[in-house]
Length: 229
Image (cartoon, rainbow, N blue to C red; front, side, top):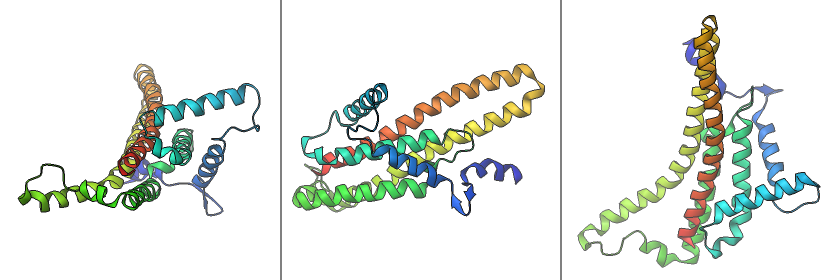
């Protein structure tokens, strides 16, 4: 029981004066996203690096997007950098990854999904309804197809939020288990060193996962947006 508590205790945020510490990471992420637009706050090489990162991220995210989705570029870019910042800050020691909790991921996924779908039904109601019945569907299968397509539509925000939380939770659990094994096996230098090497490689992999999951989340929202406009 104690092992289970210590294993999942890393997902319980620490508090200072009853204020969760994840608020700090969220504030930092939001402030970071305020510099999506060109700014004179930074100067010299820092400004050049930030501008390059920002532009390359926008090219990567919206390379296959429609022109009609241009008004959403700023919002989706901000979402990308917020998720990316929170994911990366969660890899620091004694930090808490907010995106490993479904309550946070769904608070992003559901409003964004509702927004793009409401926009789609508002702009092209008949076209959106026609998506519930694929072209060429036999008449006797139309009621079943409507139910199937409706369920697949409802499953989109569930999968969107769950994917982000599950991937980060699994990675953090592996890091915790390997770091614990490295400490326990300290009496055997060879095995401990091998475990430490694997832990380092896993940490590098988790940095990649943190970036990829931010990209996947934003790209899927952009994909849903393209389907609705």
